[in-house]
Length: 340
Image (cartoon, rainbow, N blue to C red; front, side, top):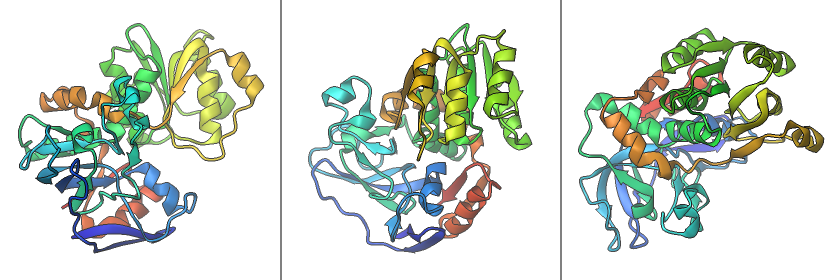
């Protein structure tokens, strides 16, 4: 099969990889219908995470080809979506709704590597969810988004307790930030403030439900949020970038007693303890338990209530994955879909 391997920072190749095989009786083999490049894939691309001939990709939809003897909930021929974190969906942590911290959790990224034609998915019963049937072609991008960015944005909005009567501020206008705006709208938020400086992303933010756009950053951005909320700050804030500036901007934009959901993969972010102490806010975040939300998200997409697929603004064949990485790294694309 063909698959993406990152040899080193900035060095992406599509090569012949060995076809996956059933190893454990809980495995499933899927033939991917579509995959994509995530903003978090840019960390190794930029040399921030170590990478050395590593299989890439963690977002995936496709058709089950083969299952292990113990797999019960999916069967060959099913169209499935899986989370970017493997989970058994039965352990105590999974049952509490945090499947990304499953006792058997395993990241699909840089292990399974789903920027490929096929993939072996461990703990298939706990990780994969079948759709009601085979989707129309135009639904595939939206279903693919549910595998990570939609599920992550939804988790962030949920962690920030977005809901009726709430003002939500979203720090970050990448794919996850845009999906958090969609989620906040679906959860009933009264006002959604998108922090963005890019006109094309602002248009998508408006499409997904943003009522206000704030271009300022840092202390100016915090001040602008407070100006828009009568000095209080937002009830709910999503941090979807992962830099020092964005994280502290999110903390500062959250009103006392408010909730902040943080899902931006962060490196070298240091939170001054005294600043966090006096902020007096609720914090919840980390790798999103996408599996918790998948049944609901699939239903909303299948019924065409939401269209997260518009977040893909560049589509390329798998063999042109290197160009997809380059376009996202240079911010010429929000998110690249790879066709198979």
